[in-house]
Length: 256
Length: 336
Image 1 (cartoon, each protein chain N blue to C red):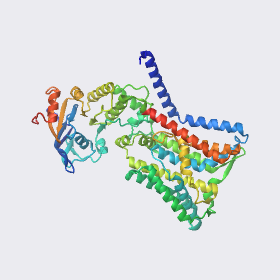
Image 2: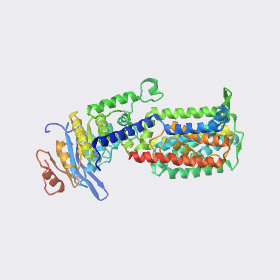
Image 3: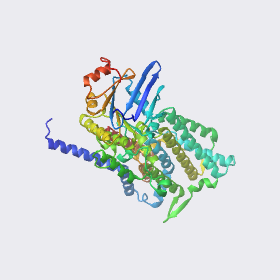
Image 4: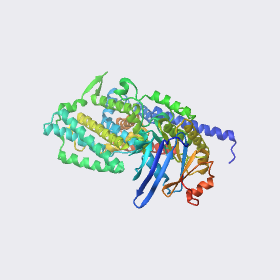
């Protein structure tokens, strides 16, 4: 990855909640086309870091750069507008709406002409066709785009959420424990999907507790401890138990 | 349990097929309520030769008019997983404001009507703001505004019925004849409102956001939709609809009655629930609500025709409501 400029980077992020310092000068880099896993024990500042990067909260100190430009996200909507999409663990879809409506939720396409402008009518056919295209690009097999999402399996539902993020994320996708609510087989399907998102050239930040998944998918692994990034390793340079040792503080490693 | 694999997979695919079929039915609309309405109408048609006469059916429509219009507003609120107990009292306040402004303050009829509807919209904004900004349950908020509106009705009217509203306010009480049957313009306005809200809910982005916020508010917010603004707009539009119901009430009764609408909140919820809209939010149709309101109207009218005491109408409505919410609860549990 050396030589390339990071797509998304942060320097010296600090976030305090009263007396608790959740982020204590954390750094972060995401390079083009990679899957970067973020791991850390509970309370290590992993989710605070992700929230700061996705606009869900604002850091007290430090700076965040997107493609080299400083950015200040005041809400997840700001991050979304900048091309950063997030997939959450808890299957964030509207179950009674159909697949196309979920993919286009908040970004509905209106019809052309008077029907769209005066009557504000939706172009459902267009949205369905596009939804079908997104899903087939990611090889998510679904019989009918008209069926409500609640008729899908958990893996397929998360597939819809991943497809939505991949469809709208112009710069990168953040996946916050995307398989935590899924069974074994469904988890495998979603992991395959994450690889396909990378194949399409979109960098992915993957937050996960599951070491085997992290080591299977990640190009690099960012390890958080006590509110800082303590190491960046790769599945080739370190073993799982070494990574866990760094994470828990049993081993220390100089940050490059 | 040692079930041979083919049997197990067959039963599983059958369950999947049933789930798909259920999904398809809910997409078409309220089949169950329509069936119940048809059954009730067939029953009363056999029992009374008057029932199916045009004049009587027109009467049924007039009798359900205000509650059905209130139930349109109630439907969009319930679709967001809310509830509005204030609708009847807010409507009554709208009627008192419009009739009193016109009769004793000298405000011309059209501005008085608009002010009456505007006051109802104001109550809607208040309900929506309290639900979203203070994060209070809709049940409690609208219980409060129910009492406020009720008190304002009686304070502003001084407990007096306001008679002789201007003729513009009673326009929708006039009738026109279709093949010997007199139909009021109010009924036409009611049907037009149903059609309009059906269109908005099914064909626009705002409509799908209403369903989605009732389905999963957090997911809707994370999808970048300003759910607070959406919910306030839902309660405000419901308020406008209650104001229109108030205008229809003045048109039909030709007075501003401070005692109007006191049970209409529960009656409108009854119509919504009988129409198959889920109290859990996110599922239901306004067409179902029209059918639900007609079911109540048909029972009331039909039982009267065959000479059953009116208290039995209430008894039967109660049973129907429990039946409808039980079906809702059972299918909801099936989805978990």
